[in-house]
Image (cartoon, rainbow, N blue to C red; front, side, top):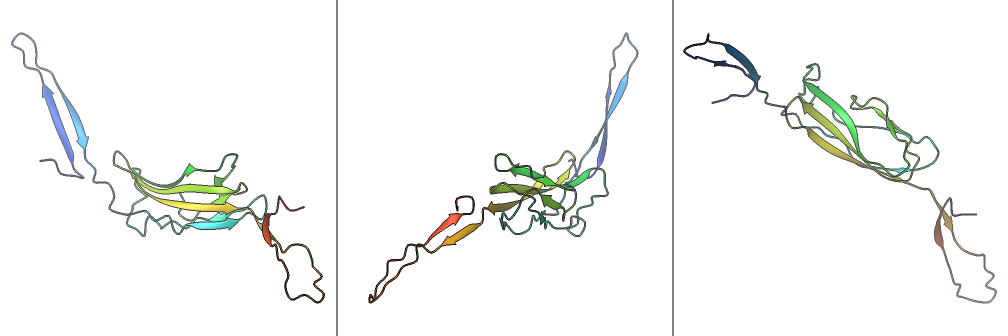
Length: 165
């Protein structure tokens, strides 16, 4: 029976009557992976107020979660799953749970994963959804004079700022 987090040595030996015997070994190291669960934080919405919108990512600290990032076999990192077309969004430090996410200037939905990966094991991930929207401008309609009338017709609407003139 193979147990996880162990090292096994297997040896293959040739044994022919007219030739000298040869042998070679292979070392197999099994890993259990991590029990720690990544948490990417709460989904967010952001109003696009300028060209360099940014947020601080709020993933869980891998060390506090029991994931040993000091081991060369383990990695914690942010990755993009999808971004709006034309986006130049960047993660300042993909290996930091509280990195800055910058250049959220294109409206749309950004999907990121906070990953805990152990070499040769399945990567565990949690997804973060960030929705960036254009600012809206209220338009209450045309001013009205309603002398001697008790009723008025209102025609309010919302305009995207790029649509307002």
